[in-house]
Structures are given as C-alpha cells and as structure tokens.
Amino acid sequence: MPTNKSNNFKIFELEKKFNNTMVASVNERLIEIRKKNIAQRLSAFQGCGHKLEQVTTLNGIDFIDDASSTNPNATWFALQRMNKPTVWITNIDDVNSMSDDLVQAVYEKVKFIIIQGVYNSDVYAFFDDFDVPSSVEQGMEEAVRQAFYAAEKGYAVLYSPCSSGSTEERGRNFKSAVAQL
Image (cartoon, rainbow, N blue to C red; front, side, top):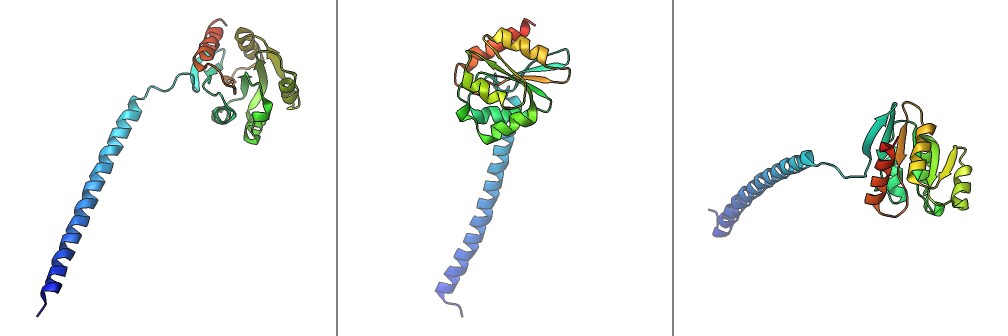
C-alpha cells in the first residue's frame, strides 16, 4: 500500500505536468500575439528619411539619398545594397577611418568617386590610388551635376557622406540639387 509520501508525490507530479503544459500553451500564445503585433508594426513602417531613400530616376540613373550614413560602417552597408554600378558622392574627411571592408566595397561597386566639400589633399591622394576616376567638387550642386555626367544609364548615384554632420540638412541639399538637374 502506498504511503502518504508517494501519494503526495504523484499529486505534485500531475500538478507539475499540468502547469508545464499550461505554461507552454500560454507562452506559445504570447509569442503568436507578439509576432502579429510586430508584423503589423513593420507593415505600417514608413522608413527612415535619408537612409537609402530613392529620390528619383533621371535618364535611367537612380539617385539615392543616404545622408544618414555618417560613418564608414553605414557607408559600407549602403554600398553593399547597391546592385548597379555606382557613382559615390562622399564628404569623407578622414580616410584613416575607412575599414578594409569599405575599401573592398568601393573597389567592387564604385565606378566614379566625387569628394564633395573643401579640398583635402590626403583624401584626394587616397582615392587617386584606387584606380577609380574621381573628382573634388566644392558644393552639393556641382557634386550632383558631376555625378549625373559621370553616370550612365543603369547606374546609381549614391550620396553617402561617411562623415559626421547634419543628416537632415545634407539630405535636403542633395535632394534640392537633384531637383535642379
């Protein structure tokens, strides 16, 4: 005949199995609710301005605003997303910050480099060694115009500064310069 201890143990064992099943069921339901909630939120997401934002297409050339890329990793990410030959407009002022991965992406994806801003001999010399045509343009309007002339049908013009600064202002300036083409 079983003792009270063994009966109590079996009761607790049944209770434990019931609780584990109940907890698993509740957990599964919560995960399902979270997945639906996340899916709803993502489907309503409008995107971030100035992050790989398609501005327009002119003469078969896509103009892409990536003014939010203010560091080498963000610019590398943007270049990795380019599926067309790319004319890259950059404001980079410190080539020592460029990672090997970014350098490799430039070699693989970029057909023309436009350094926008004040002439910096170190930056120009660095890109001159790339065996990729490049130019230095003072203002954004000149940089966008040069990019338009350097690009061919089927190319993308990517503005990805790779330097700190006002994302909003630079993005607006890029879009304004593109609108003037």
